[in-house]
Figure 1 (cartoon, rainbow, N blue to C red):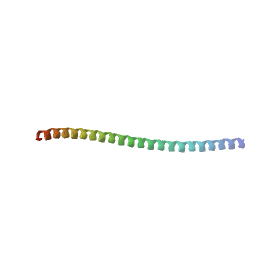
Figure 2 (cartoon, rainbow, N blue to C red):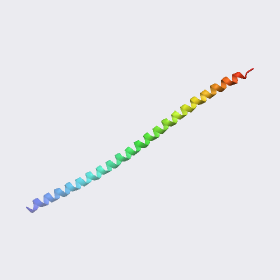
Figure 3 (spheres, rainbow, N blue to C red):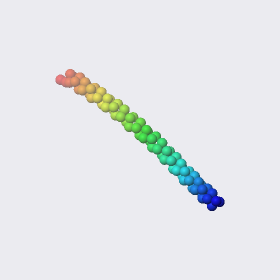
Length: 80
């Protein structure tokens, strides 16, 4: 009888240790997933900022082209 109780106790301790190991592993994975999510969000924010900057550069370039074309037309008026 004592041997049976010792076996059950040993099995329970092994299961408890295994459960603890799984819990620690799941916690690590959860933290890694959270960190990856944060990094993806930061990358996405950076991409959005780059897109906004590119749109601004494009808009400014278009304005400079218009100004250049207007200036060329005005200079033609002064040619002899």
